[in-house]
Length: 633
Ligand code: GLC
Image (tube, rainbow, N blue to C red):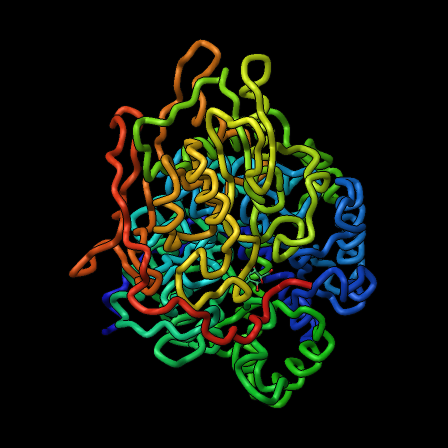
């Protein structure tokens, strides 16, 4: 398809003349070594402030599970390190202030005490763009509180096969939702492009990621998106076009390939489409060690990525090699110095737009020091949980529940804030976390206990055991946390991987206890057996730190009033474990629950129906896939 079929955009209105003059002046005064240093981003564990000063390094990041002073480090710890890098960079030969980027992808999720919002799949179910912009604003303030300038968000994947371990990082299988949210997320994070508040205090740089095609790889992390260019543009590019129009200053290249060619080395996509046709004037950053996948010979890989259009190299620890190799490639004429100048110009331009040359140390800037999880952010997160819940079944109108009941709460996810947050929560995989790692949070159980307090009674038995029969059982179960390729699966059968919850549900059902299932999951899964063993079934996705939002909807309030469900499926729900990529618009389109499905209390009770519990073919796991080279330490 000729490039002319991509929408043309005018260049960024922001590229004002004075910024360009300042950038040109700085660029003219930089040595080749300093320029190449500016193109390197490395990890805080492997690059010290001293290294940053000596080599004029342009950026640092903290990978998932990497902190300045341990998992429970304070805001002061983050600010102290940010100040150290800032001072070191000003003291470098180039004097260019450093940028710190982080994965604040559902709140400032790496930081102890931060608000953890529902992961994107739940926000997609809420279908509430204003909510998403408010979440972005709140996230930006908490990121700014720690002295960090930039988040690697939003993820704009339009996921078409739910086996992918990053399905929960996607808002929807529908480009419409992703397009709408992309604009609002970028505006919430950065402020209105060209407006007075653009990148002002309490705002951070946004990243449109991962450009392009990450959701189209048949469920294989870092796989191959095999599709026509029109689909790449109209499905997988929908969010990116919207994010760029909203002024996103950074684009992260995708690990995946497109029709067999790695995007990190794809000059047509990264330069001709993104920069020349779409008029993107910010900079392109690689993904985590993404450049090194381009060639056996490491030295060749940087040159290939930079020549294709990557401007900044995200390098976990091989920054000395990247520096030396790229400097040598330029001196050997393998990479044009004009390309280096363009890359550094873009980086300096974004730093100038972000006011970095004028701002003082991170700890002196607006919102530095906090607070994290102020009450208004926690309220917003709880609202997001409520709006994201999807009701799939409500036989005999079991829900909503009165608060004066005897409630049995069961399931491994009921009192586990780490599990309800999912991946990218304090640690990369979201594992190894206890409730006391989340001081400003409430578990689903905690919310139920608070709802029933003073009127009814709550007993918690993870395995569902009881002596005296309860009026109702609420079983909170689901997936254990994962991130990236670690979460790739071969099919969608939940019970093939997790057998215990079904046993609990069936045991309760057999003893005549009405059962409400609350399913904590990063994606639609085949749960026909679990649905059959439940009277009511609620999908909570990955709700984050405010688990109390679940009880807000399950129970009437003290005056008997209800908060009705609002959530609707932003992903089609499979009728079979092997129906892994059923999407709105398919012909034929035969999901169990279609895109947009979601019951309301106002819809009344559902009639009991028994779903088929036999997969079309045995749901046995394929050999696990090779670990992704994700950011985790
Ligand atoms: C990861 C992810 C990317 C993230 C980056 C830095 O591997 O692909 O989304 O922003 O590395 O953590």
